[in-house]
Image (cartoon, rainbow, N blue to C red; front, side):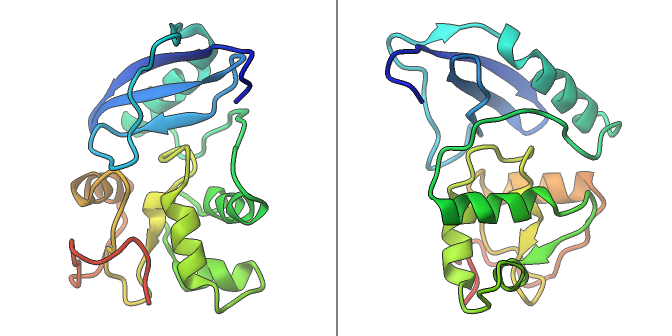
Length: 176
C-alpha cells in the first residue's frame, strides 16, 4: 500500500458475515472476515468507495449464489516472495478440491516447509478469492482458519467438499 494513496474500502454482506474489502489506488489488496484475529477495522483517513471493488462484489455474489467457481480479478498482493508463491499455489486449487499443507510445500519444491506454508496460508490477504479454506490437514482434518472454523466449514460445505472427522478447533493453523 502506498503511503501517498488513501485506502479505499467497502463492506459486503455475505452469508459468512460482513466482509471488509479494500486497498490503495483502487487496487484490491485485502478482504477480511468479521471473526478474524487478523481483522482490520476502518481507520481514519480511509475513503469509503465501492466502485473499485464492483467486480469483486459481483463475483462474490455469484460465488455465494453457487454460480461462480473461479474468481477472475486483478489484485495486488503484499507479502514476501515465499508468501506470494504459496498464495499462487492456493489460487490454483480448483473449486471443490482440497490440498494439504504438505501438498503445497511439495508443489513449491520444499517438502519440509509445511509449517511455513501454514504461516503463509494464515497471512493470505484475500481469503475466499485465494481459497485458503481449501487447505486441510494431511489426515483430512480441519486444522484452523483465519476466519474461524465455522466459516471454513460453511465454505467447504458450500463447495461440496468433504472433510475429515478429526477437526480440532484448538489446533494451530498448520499441520505438523
